[in-house]
Image (cartoon, rainbow, N blue to C red; front, side):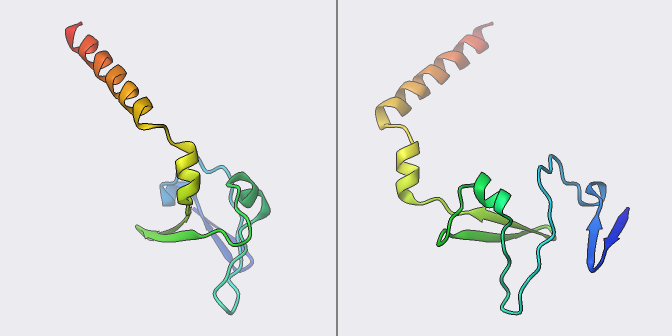
Length: 100
C-alpha cells in the first residue's frame, strides 16, 4: 500500500515491517544535505543545539541515534558495588528457577 503526498511517498507499515511507530513526519533535505529534526522529537530525546547523532543505514532504512556523552553515561550508571549486588541477585533468581 503506497500513499502519495506531494513529493512524499509514504510506504505502509506492512511494507516496511515497522512496529510501534510513535511519531512520523516527513522532513526536507536542504541543498547542503541537512534536515531539521522536528521539535517534538528534539524535546522527547532532549536534543539541543550542538548535540550529535549517528546515522545508520539498516536494511534499506536510515536510523538516527542520539550520541550520549560519557558524562551522562556516568551520571546514569550504577557503581561497581551496585552492579555486583544486582548480578548476585540475578544469579540467585536463576538458581531458584532452575530448582523449581
